[in-house]
Length: 260
Image (cartoon, rainbow, N blue to C red; front, side):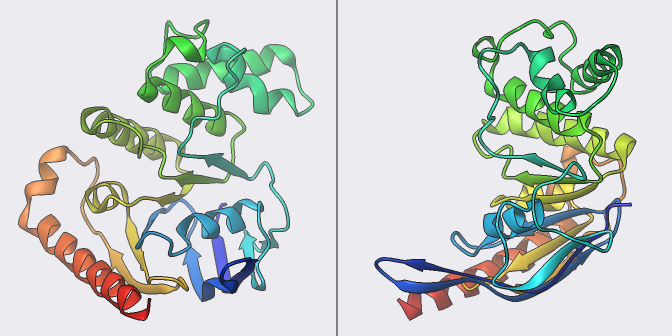
C-alpha cells in the first residue's frame, strides 16, 4: 500500500504584485508503493507546493492527487509529514512529542507508550525519551520529527528538505539513518531536496522539475544497490548522474532568468 498518483495537477494562486501565478502546470507523476522518490528543482519551482497537495494541505486548481486510488482532499493518517523546521512542542518531552499523533486516535494508552518508545529507539534516541526539545541538537530534533511521523504508521512519508538546516556531517548521519529506517519500514517516501548528492544517495528515483510553472522534465532511475555508503558519491556512475541533473537545472535557471 502507498501508491501516490499525481494526475494533470495544476496549481494557481493570486498575488497582489503579480496577479495570477501558475506554480504547477499539468504535472503528472506516479510513485509506486515502497519507492523512495526524490524531487529536485530550481528554487520557486513548486516542489513544496506539490508536497502540500499530496499532504492535503492545499487543493489543486486542476487535476487530482490520489493515495491508493483515494482522492486527497485533506490531511490524513495515511500520510506522515516531516517539514524542514522541526515543529516540536517545546513543552513536551521527546517521548510525549512522538506520542502526540497517536494520542489523537482511539487506542490503548499503554500501547501508545510502547509504540512511541519503539520509534524513539529506532531513530537512535535511546536515553533521551525524557529530554525536552531545548536540550537537543538540530539533528536530534529532526530524529524526533521523523519518529513522530512514523509512529502513526502512515503509508506515505512526505519529507520537505528535512535535513536542509543541518551541518554536512550531521546531514550525512541523518541520511544514513533515514535509509536504514526506510529499508526496515518499507514506506513510500516522497522527499524534496535542493541537494543533488542527497537526492542520488537516498533515492530509487530522482524526478527533476522545471522552473516555474513546475512540471517534471526528467526522471532518473538511480540503480545503485543498497545498503549505500558514502564512498558512493565519488564513483564515476554517481558523478555522471549528478552532471545530468546539474545540466537540467542550469538550463531551467537560465530559461527562468531570461524570462524575467
